[in-house]
Length: 339
Ligand code: NAD
Ligand code: DAU
Image (tube, protein in one colour):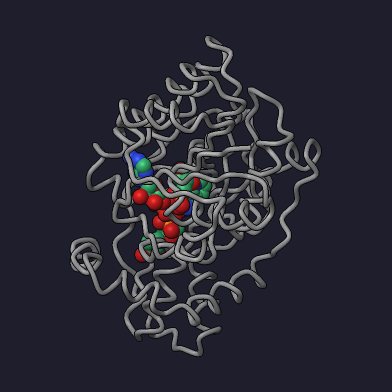
């Protein structure tokens, strides 16, 4: 089996590459990644010498490049993680989100149609469903919840999902889509809540909590996400959407206070800052379908996963300090200085 993993130098794609190479010693994994600010070859360093792995630098929206790669490699499966993934950046500058997340997905689908494929899997997000109110804990996203997006990021991901479904209906492309809740774990870029709070707390910097910190996210340890995608590409029904999440809801403030406690820091580091425009209140996944059809369940609960994650950041300081000592400083200034 030959799998092209797009966006494999990023957080979840990188974890997926590690997971698949460890699990299947007869699969060839090709990582196609543009190496944007979020792509990091350090994440792939442990597998660069693996004979079953190959890294290719390129843009999923570059049609000629993608067609050449398909012609040369004749992949069986595509798992598309490549995306602009940060909501705050999409509010600052939406254009690149449309280019990569929508046009890029369209190019990959065309390549699959032209060269033939056993499976195209689109890694989507629960954000395509919009949000749930805080005062209705009985409500969850199911696969039939209507798409109702809030940010340019989520709108671009929903657009891509619609395109993927259209290629299934019209061209009979064998696709699947997964919509996952918030991931956390090793190799998470420190612009996102959990790694940002860990890095700032370790450096005794302020911890910027948007609004009142009451927004709720449904946290999933990244390896559980990888295992779910593995199950879907092998046993998921073609044409179907699978929600992935494991009832690990926490308010942002709970998450930040847990990190502070684990690191033995003071809650005085918390700084309440201007809220994110259009900020989604609550995400919560109903994972019944993937549980009943594929037998997937999360293995790592939040209290254990956050400890493992903090330990990883303590043990791998070089990975994230290299990031925050670079261009990231300009980003941080721009996004947080006047909040
Ligand atoms: P990330 O930002 O850490 O990584 C994205 C990767 O894609 C980077 O390596 C980047 O270089 C690459 N990339 C960007 N544009 C590209 C292009 N045009 N061509 C080729 N490569 C390109 O993202 P992530 O958090 O790992 O998310 C991966 C996927 O999972 C995304 O599609 C995201 O929407 C989805 N997702 C993320 C989460 C989460 O909590 N992080 C949850 C659900 C779904
Ligand atoms: O739900 C899945 C989505 O989860 C993915 O599709 C996205 O790619 C991923 O980035 C993530 O989106 P969120 O917007 O939920 O994640 P983020 O880490 O940016 O923020 C989590 C919550 O924390 C959110 O309510 C905003 C808040 N926050 C975030 C940052 C960066 C803060 O309070 N302060 C911060 O500095």
